[in-house]
Length: 218
Image: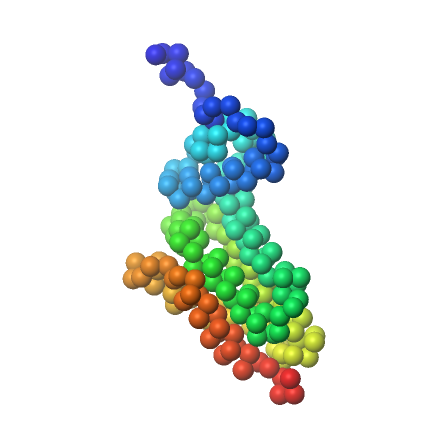
């Protein structure tokens, strides 16, 4: 019918009553799926609204632009990583156990097929859309690096580690943990690592790093 052709884009069906926080979570989940399916250039706010089951008016009120949607997708994943390595989550662990926990969380974040898909998208489209390169660097690379460096700084303050530059140490840890397997997955040479492989790699990386950085008296 002609009437249907003129119907404005809106979410399908009447959404249940939910909080704004729940609605935002649905939108971010839908945006992740839409970027994965269509890329950044091909994704549309209307398609995200349909996937989330909300009206476009609701979508624009909560997250008003496509670049803000993309940034929210990245921030959501990094936010979960930051919570996993919060000081309270590591409080009852010794230094080696804590570092293993941090590296496992980082490996699960960065070696996940969804994260690798986002990274592929960024690398392929950031020349046309520099805002997604900035969002990925600020929300993913920098925030994860800063969180790890903060933990290393604390170990130095406690006299457990000897590091001139915790930021550089965090960068080396990140590279040692993920660079080789992530590159292999991105080049289609292997599947994303399973959790048991991530755990083994984290254990080895933690031991290598700490053996080189522990204070002699520790």
